[in-house]
Length: 589
Figure 1 (tube, one colour):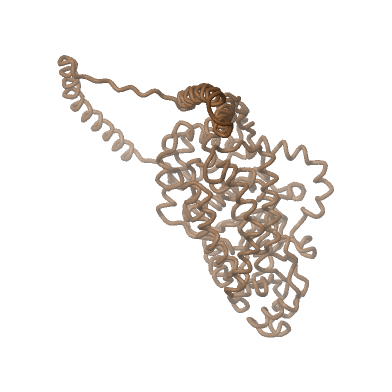
Figure 2 (figure 1 turned 90 degrees about the vertical axis):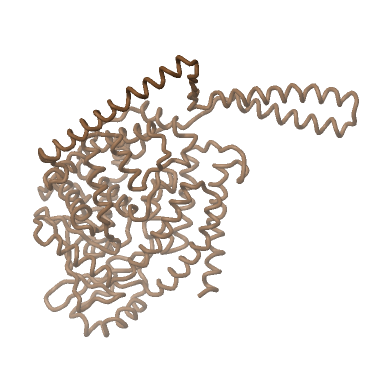
């Protein structure tokens, strides 16, 4: 096993090391020192595409890693995140005879375990593949772990652990924090996804939580035919949730469907504390009566009560647009560094709220904020503790699905209505009176403290013992640049004089050294006066950008509809996702 791990380490290094060095040179021109380089968004996108190809080449573990990275804007620049959202497994199903070995080792002969079994996989993914079968009078979906994937994943996890200290040397402290939590999260997540007994237990628990909820259906696990490597569930067909044409033909209210989806996740995260963590469109379907169907519980998790409380506080602050309360909550959750520039982060939050409400965002506002953070873009103070990473994944993916269903969907209003209906934001008269009494008490205490301090200050003025210290605010470092230019200008002038003197009185070699230093100083001085290009900010992840892309690609996508859309039952024959777990690892474009 160690020999395989060493070999995999060399293979991974061959693919990743050039990209890692390039990424590091963007931050330090000479890797360990020097100024940062200006890299265009188009160049970063090309690099992201190359990294994506490398992950696909390296196989299942790194495909899963890429899917996880697509939800981590605290680890990678936005171009990488956007590119990785297009990641698909692109792994053909394993040979049936190999899959039969796993299936029969767990359940015995296929002919005895099932009344009927289709040996053509209806879904092939990185960690498992799904077949359709029949037990007595019930259609079932059977998920079988991919043969040999355990050893491959174990070797790749060792490689990632060995590579992590090397990668940490190329990144700053805040990004190192995110990389370490990402490694921990990925190791835990991929092992949990391979444990089908755990998935069956999570599926059953969440299904029980929704037992009395109308409009939501979760396939039942069939315990008699489920083990650690095989999971059998009832077969529940439905229309893919993003197939808007099919939903409209069935007369389904897409806005109501989006609201049901969001409310379902609020129930899972805030009330139940256990949630389905992979809500991409391949794992969500809709029945003809509008019932929402959840598939694939391989990625699922628990939410601690502390995190639940903070999520409620966060959405309550968002609902009231209390920016200071939003930032305080993010800091308490560990998502935002306490040293963050609150003014800049406040502006970022205002834009995020406006976009979540579906409001138009002016280009100049985005450009203004980007210009204020572009010098520290890789040290941006957002980070994701491991216990919040899956929650963030759910929030971002669910919002994307909701906006696909209804481009005008107001995520915040729906969240506010839900919290109010469940009693999370409603406050009684008693709480209101207590808060006002506390405010009066604090004001009275401040009133008692002010006069003595004022008298002390007046006494110091009378004794001419009052000193005032003033700091010059220079957030754009104008004074720092001016000082550097003055110093380099003086060094250049001195160098010219020294070179001329040595030319007359010293050897050619000494003069050449002095001349070279003078030329280098001149180049640095010239560079300091060059106009900074900055970043041409575009709100790539806003609803405006989504609509623009939809309009731009509408014609080209029309020819792909038969392959990408339609009911899950129709896609079953061609390998699309359609039942509990069928869409296990597929990521939507």
